[in-house]
Amino acid sequence: MSTLALVRHGQASFFSDNYDQLSPLGEQQSRLLGQYWVRRGIRFDEVFTGPRVRQIETAALAGEAFAKAGLPWPEAQRLPELDEHQVDRLIKVAMPQIIRDFPQIAPLHAAYQAAQEPRDRHRTFQLMFEQLVMLWVEGRIAAPGVEPWQAFHERIASGLRKMTESEQRGRQVVAFTSVGAVTVSLQIALGCGDRTALDLGWRLRNCSITDYIFSRQRLTLEGFNACPHLEDASLLTFR
Image (tube, rainbow, N blue to C red; front, top):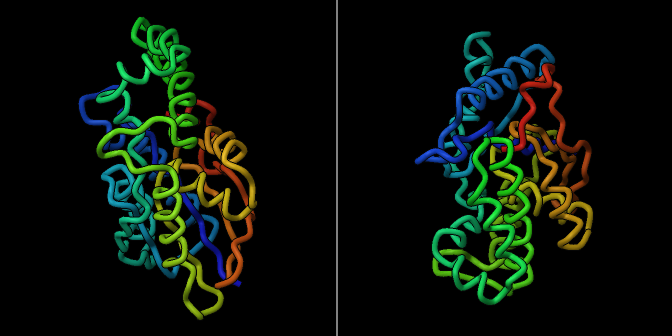
């Protein structure tokens, strides 16, 4: 059997002008991940990343520990299928229409807009975003540039197949991606419904590891949302 480690990217620059870059804390999380793997003697035959800067940076910073230790770190292969969904775009381009169609979103959006402290902004955003994602999954909201849930699901499934379809046994593969892709992988492995998969996905911490054992026919969950490299509680983040 072969193994696949799916890593959610380190903390990105939430609420900044450019979200798609790691924060200083996200950089630290990524370096600690690589150092942990080196200490544990974990090696990889293949490395994949999605196309986002935050995904690529996480892989590169984790790989630094291998280079410093004089150990091999395979060149990362860019896999567009591991890109995140664009549901956040709905907030920018479709929120007035969404509020008209689904008035229950209005107080959540108002609370998010009124929030001032970082903790409150994160909390109110998450409450609103979870509702928006569920409406998107149900096919009840859409916007140009936002692929439907089923198309997103199939894209991620295609990426998983590309990483796991080799006949070679005993491969150790790592892929750096985002919450949406890990959520779909959980749904495929567990055979669960959309709501259950999303509820699991919301628990994924930055730079966490979700492990699978795989063959061409099977994808079996081995470990979920692990952060053994983040020993200090202050390093544990969701956004």
